[in-house]
Image (tube, rainbow, N blue to C red; front, side, top):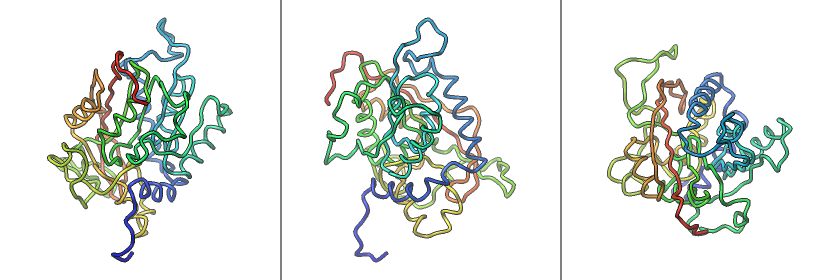
Length: 307
């Protein structure tokens, strides 16, 4: 690409990358194990989220629970929470990811009224109230979730605030992402190499993002989309590798940073925890063990919507 070529916006960079890998995104055996571990951990933490769910067998079960899965990808968090919610709506900037999400949803024989995703962007500051999402079906969610997504968001405070605005008062935002300093290198057989703690998933950084990022983080490049699970074969192509690099802003977060940007976004009852065990991944063609963090915050009961 020549130096005079126009620079992709972050949403465009994410769309380009994830459209390319949608059909191979989560098919590796190690990926299935990561997804299962995340599923087990989050399902064990239903009470931790702090909202009534459906179908848990508790006397406090809710009749209707609505989930917004943002940067939904192929639908990991939608699948995790599916037994405990009654309606799921997904949004993603990648048309191909949305198509995969909906294909998998239809394969479960659930109707679109129960689970469906659309292409869209809630974080565009030039279009803060997109008409596409102005209807009541896109407001007052009980739960908003973003799985392995925030490392692709340009302004994490803005992102958290936009998702908070989609919640009902008392509704919860839940995210997962990667812990800064939580990586271990892996040997050729995929075994963890003790004593190699650090940040090993990305190697090309620049400072970017909200004020906390500027002070504390060297970040990879750019805004909007998700996941951190990447197929090595995709990275054999320079163009795809460039698209990946262009989609990542903050490759990992400290617990304090996440707590701070949740709080700055206006969320309360914020908590940030880590999974007990690291997970094996192949990130950008690099074999490593990563530490996953989970964060939750609640929209204040007394807060009025700005939408």
